[in-house]
Length: 300
Image (cartoon, rainbow, N blue to C red; front, top):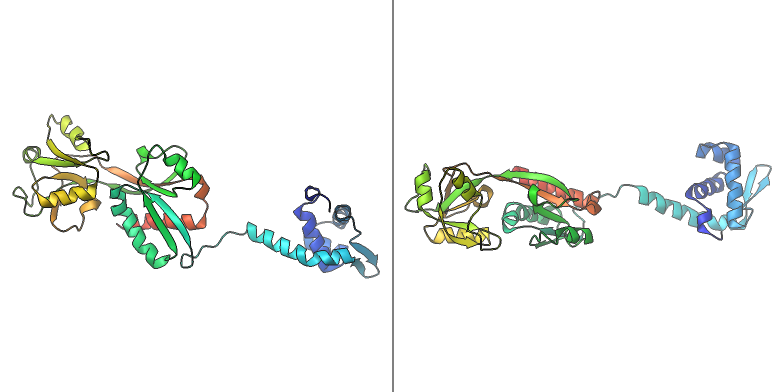
C-alpha cells in the first residue's frame, strides 16, 4: 500500500473477515453486504496492497503469503481502533492524575475540604492543587489546562465555560461567644448598626458590601473598622475581640468560640457554582469529580 489515504477502515475490516472466512459469500453475509460489494472491496484492496491477496479455489479463496503476513497485524490494528471507540472506564480507586482547582478561601472551606476528605478515601491516587481565583486569567488558564475546576458565582463565571450549581448560600451575623451584646434572640437593627463591624474583601481595602447596600435601602449605615482579605482570618479576629461580621452560613456552622444568628435585616445571599472548560466536559474522571463535588455540597 503506497498511500494510507487510499484505504479506509471498512476495507481493512473486509480484509480481516475474508482472511477468517476464506469465502466471499460467507464474508459478505458476516459483513452485512452483498457479494458484489465485497468483491469490489477486494479489488480495491488488491490495488492498495499491490498484491492479489487471494486466489480462487474449489472451496473458496486462498490467501497469498502477503495476505497471511497481514493477518495478525490487521487484527491488532482493528482491535486497537475498536478500543479507541469504546467508552473509557473510570475506577477512582486506581485513578492517578492531578486535579487543579481555583477557589476563594470561603470555597476552600465550604467545598474543597469536604472534597479532599472523600478523595483521600475513594481516589487516593488523585493529587489536588488549589490556587486562588484570578478572574482575568481564568479563561486562559482553563483553556490551557492550568485549572480544571473553578468554584465561582454565576455572575463571575466567564462566558464559554460550562457550569453546574452547587448550592445557595445565605449570610448570618457572627460574634464571639461571650460578646457583651450577644443574645439568644440576636440583635435589633439599632444594636446592629451601633456595633463596630469587620468585613471581608478580596483586596483588603473595601469597607462596604452587600450588607451596606441593604442598610442604605433602609436609610441606615454601620461602622466598618476592619477590612480583611480572608474569611478565615476574619473569624480569628471575631474570636479575639468585640467586633461583629456578616459571613456566609457554611463558614461558621460548627465552629467553636463563635455564635451566629439571623441578621436584623434582609441581606441577599449568593449561589456557588463549579465551572469547567469544554475540553474536560466528557472526560470520565472529571465527570466523576464534578458529580462527587455536587453530592457533597448538596449534603452540606
